[in-house]
Length: 284
Image (cartoon, rainbow, N blue to C red; front, side, top):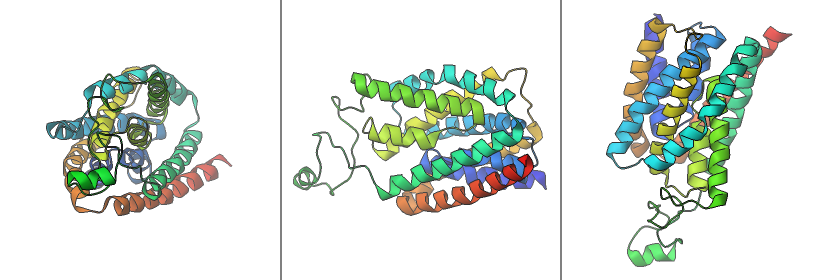
């Protein structure tokens, strides 16, 4: 029965990770704790394996379609390595119920970020830097995002100091969250890539998965010899999540993006309220 539950949850989380490039991984820890009975710290460690391997598989699929900027992904991920070690150290020092309370709060923040993404969509940035009329003259549907051209802000290696600083800050935050809570941080990465580097959504999703894989690997290295790995749960969960992530892109192609994101944000709010309530009751 445990394996069946792990497989089902893995597929659901993998689907959301593959379709949205993030957000799904934040459900992994609550799923491991409340559905599969894992201790909080063991759940954050197991989550790193599940999320990292799933993101790696998803990134490979996106890379085949040309939806990964490797230079940006490697830079973003490398920046977060140091803070992922700091987050891991703090994870070992915090009470498990406080850890879960912080996790619930983070889920509310992530849900709000996803909601903002749908209510305030980022305008399409085209090769000539503007949209609308140029789309019509070029025979393209208005508002369809294109990959930035060689001189655009999203191109690898072409970063202003201000943009580079924003990437560094976002990378540091994501690395810390990955180490501390065992989450991928895609809900931070994807908006950062879209708004700061002007990546179209497919490119942001693919690159986000590379960054998540790097941060997860770094956090696992930091826990080497100290983390608890329950492989009987982790392995089926991970395999199911990988299958789900590979199908996630097809889901995204068939389902209206904003509707999918809003539904997922609502689910995150419900889970966050449950996690916070359980944690508060355990602390008082």
